[in-house]
Image (cartoon, rainbow, N blue to C red; front, side):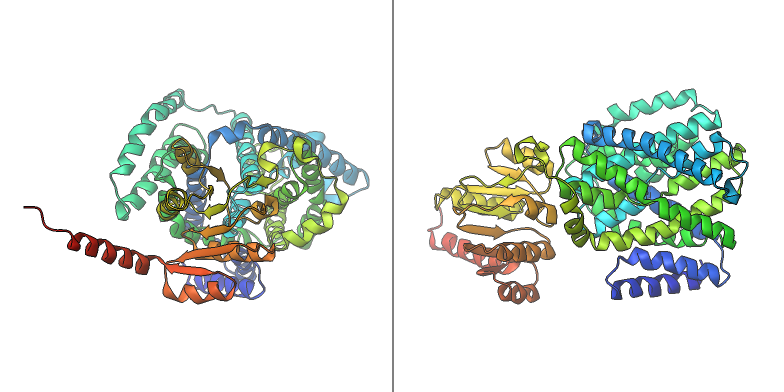
Length: 527
């Protein structure tokens, strides 16, 4: 790969970070800069970009509950928005043709319909990347946005199948055998540990069993990677596999964002129409803002999900490419849509980095629903009669829960962001609720009662504990707060920001081990 690609990507990402924007904004700008300097998209960079997208969809599948796609706020919004957006763009483009816009002269309603359909998609890759950077893919609005994007991907696959006239191979029916084979794959994942074999197994599942097998049978490979990931999602080791692939996926996705800017340098006429499409993009935004609250979602959930979906999609390019090959569209439209998509990513990244201030401005224009009528997952979070709350129900959190309950007689409530953890330990008698303390939406819904005396920050993520501490003190919580840390240099920042007690995991484990050893040593040896 060209050394200039790596250098410009790093400079772009560094510049974006300096401006407090997501690094992907800098990668996109770097792609345009490279294009302006005369560089073109190479087969190597294209292969890296495709690999990044495939791994991204596979890791999303690892975190996805397939039942979430069956929720009305997902399939209902996705379906209604697709139809309404396509129709609205069709009407607007027809109006622009009527007033004499040169590029639309000679375009029949079929061409305008295909264009309207192409720009109705939102970007799966971009939205998920933005959500992951903020660690909000598990937030309600993040789950809804991802579900809508996957439904859009399914619509795109149906369009591609219908437009090419090529049905999948009859052998594609054999893909249903992956469902009974899934327990075997999960069992194999158990035996691989956490080293290089786990990572290699992830590549095998995503690229061979997912992408290559589905492509060979006439089904889109990226969809295959997503489905294989979903089959493994119920396994307890699925999050660990996603984490093992994280750095590789992130590096490959740099290639994807660079490639967007390297597609083509359009003439001024094409640039002008691409900018016009960007002016029309708020039509999609308004439709999402109108539809989401109809499904009993809070204003904040609707606004943040809308911001994640307010962009054009890489699927627009795929749909356009198929339409060009079928002679439904002229080739120039592929360049126009490529440019509009790339610029929409930059604008959307800037908007999403300012999501809270935008929400505060937009909420005054929207009416909030009565809490009792809200979606069950979007109602205020009540802590009830809990006296102690533990954020993070891993091994340390569960140990603290048992100790506070058994020895000190406190009524304890645990909070964890993993639905499998919540379901498993709720069945064992723990009082748990699902919530992500690193998600600003969780704190926006949380109602801290006066009865809470103690909060333990037992999350493995230091930044999560720091955020939770700031949120609690910002809400004038007057109880005691204790936290755990993995590294000694993390102790003082937590104390300075208001933690009453901070415990070093390994130091405390060493003290406990020594105490236990001395207790055993004090006992007489058995004869």
